[in-house]
Image (cartoon, rainbow, N blue to C red):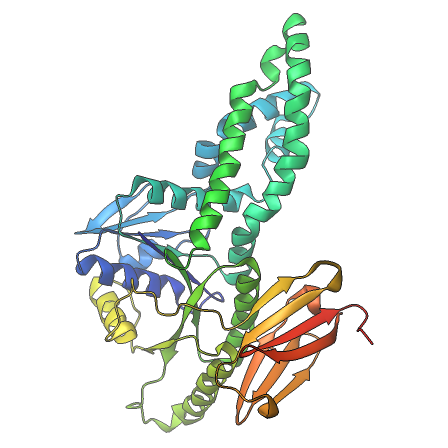
Length: 393
């Protein structure tokens, strides 16, 4: 099974591209499902079909689903939440407040990930397309397994241990039903194990790919750079940049002349920002891209000789490693580069590399902003830059 996640800044056309990709896969005979994890759903509008919180078959080999957070929460977290809500409300908390405080941090977003695991385990679909929320929400979603693991180990484990002691006492005084039993805690363990499985799925480049959707606009590209850096930090494989709404060459109206010129400059900048990542382009159409006919045309323009389920890139344009007390190491593969041709320029949140006549612009994660470059070496066809609080002598 192939899992393809489309993410990018709000308004760049992720939903249209997700729907067009899914339709192209379905028409190639692959059983395909496209799911929307954005709370402001527009997948149904793009497909011009009615869909809901469970998969709906819209077309031969094509299913779609707009994930409803509350529906998913009740499905995966409902039982343990009811236990905890009863416990809090019996201690005097308002029932509505009790329900809110018993929502696991991040689980509203995490319920989306649990569907991915379900479809992978069922093995019915050949391709799963994820139309994700705007970049900030997507990054919270993809970092969820790391964040909630701490919550589970520190809080839930403590509460589970206490419940073993309190439950017999609760039964003796007629309040045992307010304390979760072992099977409820086992369900929570399964929930976290499932999140870990999804992390494994999405970080396996042979199975999953993240594709960054951009428009040829400087602000959009800069935000997408930050997203790409954090995806590298969490170990998720990005295999393509999808540049949407490029003004076609046949548009000759003088009104668009400056816009076209800026777009061409920004497409060059995409090459500087994302290195060897393949760049696929889709034109700006003269009408809204909705309905199967328009989506089919978008898919044809975007992929041309490629097929959407292919793995477009198997490698890393850069990665960041935590090296403990010594800080962090940024590793940038630069095959065929010559050490004498390398220059580095650093601002607080960006690093610009010059390799001969070419440039790479890398946005640094927040953890590196206040660190200094302690060491920089060109070894084994890669530039290794160490960031530390106090540079070595």
